[in-house]
Image (cartoon, rainbow, N blue to C red; front, side, top):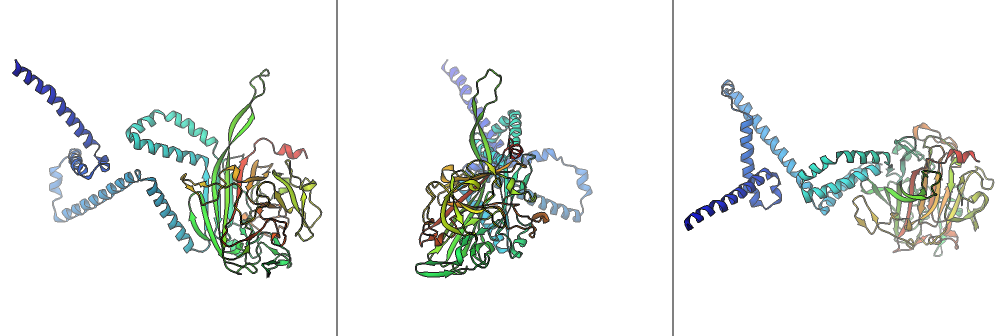
Amino acid sequence: MSSNTGTNKFPSIVLPSIALASTACALLVQNHHRVGHVPAIFKRIFGRFGEKKTKKTKEKETPFDENETIKTSSSNDEKDDDAKAANKSSSSKEVKEKVIKEEKIGFLSPQEKMEQKMERNEERVRRANEKGFEMITIRASSREDAKKRERAKTTTKELLFGKKRMKMKKGASDESEEEEEEEEEEEDVRIEVDISTFGAAIVALRVPSKESEDVEDVVLGFNSVEEYAKVDDHPYFGVVVGRVANRIKDGKYTLDGVEYKCDRNDGEKHTLHGGLEGLDVKRWTLKDVSESHVELSVLSGDLEQKGFPGNCKISVVYRVRIIERAKIRERKKMSLLEAPSCELYVEKYASLTCEFKATTDAKTPICLAQHSYFNLSGCDSNEDVGYHLAEFPNVSKYLVLDDENIPTGEIRECHEAFDFSEKRLVFAQLPPMRTPLGFDHNFCIDGDNFSRSVNNRPKSYFAVEDSNYSRHASIPSTRFNESLTHCASFESSSSGRTMDVYTDAPGFQFYTGNFLDGTTRGKNNVAYDANTGFCVETQWWPNAVNEKDFPDSVLEVGQTYVHNTCYEFGLNKGIGASFVASY
């Protein structure tokens, strides 16, 4: 009785164990390509099983043909066959190595991925600096951002749950993904910016219009980098100006009892934008670059620019991103009886930020500005910007000028022609008579930064997140609204494009291209006439080095000059032509 029970128990215990072990072995052999992620001893064991299996399957797929072998029995043919076999084995080896490399890349740590990206960026920087003047394109797209986020989520899920399960899940939800893609295509917002190492110039800035998804250039300039370098007297198209942007009266100032004299390049009487050898004609060095940002730097030597002491290290970071803002609008009523109500929606904007930093080894006046000429109707439209709509929120004062465009020292409340507290046409009212007609005035920005010295940080200061969502605490940012003040808004009635300007500078020079006269031919051989572009040069106030009541513009040794500006581009498909017609 006992012996029978013993014999009956034996198969009931052992056979399931054998079946379980054989199933486990079969699964491991089947998934031998994943064995690279387990200890090396298991890889060697199960890798052999995989190799034997592949050999057997190849033998079954390619049956042996005796007659064909007899026909090709000559020595020359044998050598050829050996050579082919060698080539085939080497090529298959390369393919295997490539597959293994690609699989390993998927399992790199975030730090290793960052190191690889930095190596690629350093190589691009090295190559660009070996050449002469270089042009770099940075871009951002809401659709691409969404795809990157989706790829990042998919990679994480694959690591957690395995590829096969994710593929099954993906196949089951193809229809929903197609619907999402259609929605993304409708809401795509893009921006592309071409930047030159000559003068750190913005050569082109392309944003969408309401008529199509194609992007269109909205800044004046030239077609190539070489044209910027050749033109002696260009109107500072898109360049960074300094050391001191705007004007210095009589081309001189006194610092610590020493009088400094600068180039008089404004009517041979005053200094304009740093003089004849300003930052606008320098070759900037490419320090860092990625798909969405570029960093350029330059050294302005001691008295290299006539009248400016100290070795001044200057850098600018141009960064593009897509910004989403929550807004409120009136909900459409479904019936006459329904009470009015509001709804929340998200508006997307294409953003370009300019982040300036500077240090010096001797006291020196400094004021940097980005000098792009904008025409929101298109760079070659030649449309008068006087027909753009403008509004200057958080601006209540401006600087009074003399007949030579030099501030008199008086800070006056905005009134009549200078009142942009509500949306209006730029030339609905013109400033006092001058030749040529138009604006070339400094508007003072209300708020915490109204009287900020160049030696002080902005009142609100945040770190930025780059495309990899990693923080860089040392980089000034316009990531959050609180760090900057909204100082200007513009809209083209013909294209529907809008531009909002944010900054932490004490003021901005609003210039309407008064001195363009049709003699300068720019992109697409267009002759730029007067008032075909406008500038919003965020900066410290003009001639501040000679005015004690103006915000301090003299940088001390050991301090860091920080100055940020953000341009946000959107579309207004509602008003425009109807608003202009009302004037």
